[in-house]
Amino acid sequence: MALNKAYTQYKENSIFTSSPEELTLMLYNGLVKFIMLAVQSIEEKDIKKAHDNFIRAQDIIVEFRTTLDLKYDIAKQLDSIYDYMYWRLTEANIHKDIEIANEVLGYARELRDTWAEAMKIAKSKSKSGRGTQVEQ
Image (cartoon, rainbow, N blue to C red; front, top):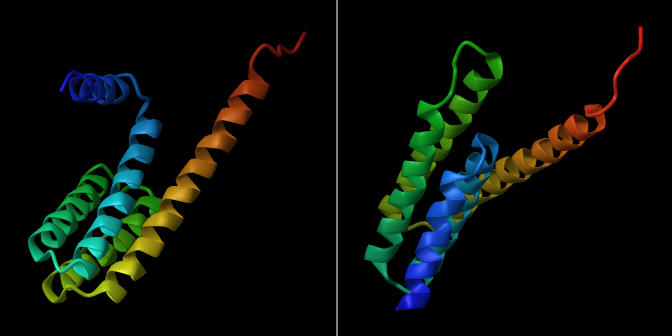
């Protein structure tokens, strides 16, 4: 019981101390996790658990969509992707369709991996820019 409480506290602390970029990566990881759990639940014939995990995945997509700044073209493109993923997850949930869920899982993994790579690039660029001053 104490271990569970410590883990919960650790998770809360990591959320409160994470940068917006790290929180986005956590959400992508959650999206992947919940789709995988939904697929596993379908395979185990646990319809309620599958439904709950699909809903959690869809909630993450809704969060992504509500935080987009649609004045940028990339945000509009992401919104279209998220919209497609949301409706495909709805279909997967209604029909308990593993094939559709796996399709969306592929997109979720690709978005997550792209985000993680962008974070690495941004971090390396910010490190290489530190401590270097141009003398005039």
